[in-house]
Image 1 (cartoon, rainbow, N blue to C red):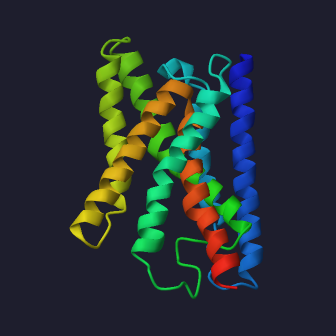
Image 2 (image 1 turned 120 degrees about the vertical axis):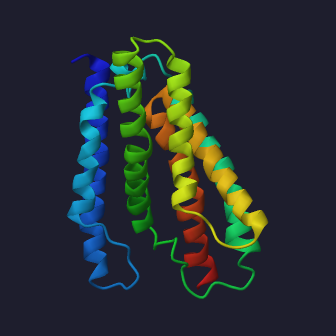
Length: 232
């Protein structure tokens, strides 16, 4: 196992460990707090489905999670900023314009801080495993590299990128005014498509950092603002 793959495996195991801590933390909080969203161990176990795909990133034509050819600018900081840019309009539109009345409780898409840090980082990992890591790696490795012997890589990649990008908007189809449905669907599709592009460019961490950036603003900092400044 080369050094990049070894570091990638260790990093993925670290993410799994954080998700395990989230299970224990949530179950502990739920004993004394109502409204806590709790992961169970079945939720954690399904994350293990992503583990085999960590070993075939290069074979699928993708960067390793920790790849010496990819700088942190493209793996961490640039995608984090992209996530911020997608989150800010969501906060303005959904958090305030569509909710002009004062908050009296934390809305259902937010959780108490600092538990929100572990919950939404684990949630981001789950989504990225099943929206990006498994489907994109599997299709590129099996179809592009094995069956087509490296031919038509662009067509194969953009086909699976578009299919994975449209999944989340369809699964979370919004309700409300037509303009909001158009905005939410287009924004969700654009972010997921950018994540697929970032995955190919900078690896799985690059794709995940976009979602981390979005969740940091949308789920965590908005929650901190409402919990500590609005409700007190």
